[in-house]
Image 1 (cartoon, helix red, strand yellow):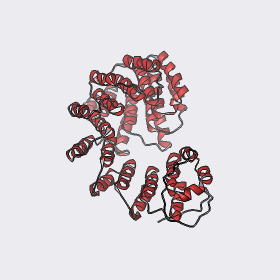
Image 2 (cartoon, helix red, strand yellow):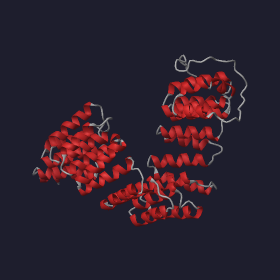
Image 3 (cartoon, rainbow, N blue to C red):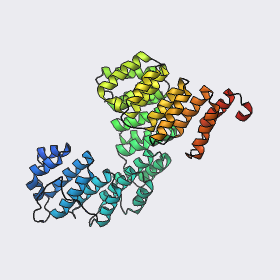
Image 4 (cartoon, rainbow, N blue to C red):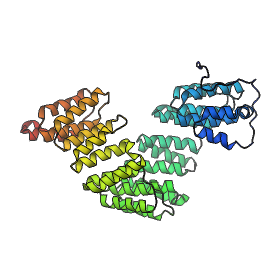
Length: 445
């Protein structure tokens, strides 16, 4: 397998291995609480004798490793599981496999899967989930195809994976196969399929799934109802989406966010802000998704006062540490004429992210500061961040509105030759505008 380091984190005594005997006594609440809070060393030392007498308790320690993102401790626990004599037990092996997969250590998970003496459907499902989390849909599909037996969770993993990476048509095809083979989709299947329909803006397919949802009694399920409303709104049917939300017997933050985002995306910015106020009066706590939608609405309406108020509320909840929220703030302040506030929001970022840099470049361009936009792009490259098509669109826009023809053409060529990005219609439109503004009408044609 692989070499394990000395157990410096868990200073333990290795008892004589004993036959596995999974007991049915209740797990001590204190042990469970310590594991869920990531206090693994404390949990082990306090309940060492119980763990050795009931090795199934290793599953809670492994769960704690996932929560704390601790691969090193997971490896140490793996060593102790082998010592306990229970490494061949499916229950414990699957928890170990799940820990490796969730921690992103897919190669280690594959190695473990290969030597597991007893595997079941759950083992395969865990590995499929690990591949998908790692973005390897090909290997996930290969594992799926090779499985002699599948369950609903298997199909859910694949459908979710496909829609997550925007292979929406493939996701819908899998759903159709699943249904045809007699598997009963659950709320997770339906939620993923509806997100796939939303991604395709496939209203007809979405309505067919809606009919199935009603037939199977899921129309009042919070997850399915919110996904259904999102599908309608994303497909341009705001009214039908609102009907779905209003028919739900219980409201949640997710349902409120769906309604707010739907209104914002369909050009009803005032309606989005109205719904935000209703949400707060109903006692729901806005989250990062809420703030992205309402700050974007303030941006569209150029309502600085309300934007500042929502910014203050976002600070109280800690949401201003989130990339999407910071990006929305940069755009909002820029559109409201407060470039200095955009710069301040950008400077307070915690992590480097191409979305934030692109938003700030766009803000400079919006205010006619093309040189500053190019300078920021150069800094971005120096920090090792790779620009995307949105970054280059913002740069071309900035050059166009500042008459920087030569630099704009140089950036356009850089996008193609150095970054290997294929220009879209909007990029060509910017270049044509750039040439037109510079009096180069023949080149623009």
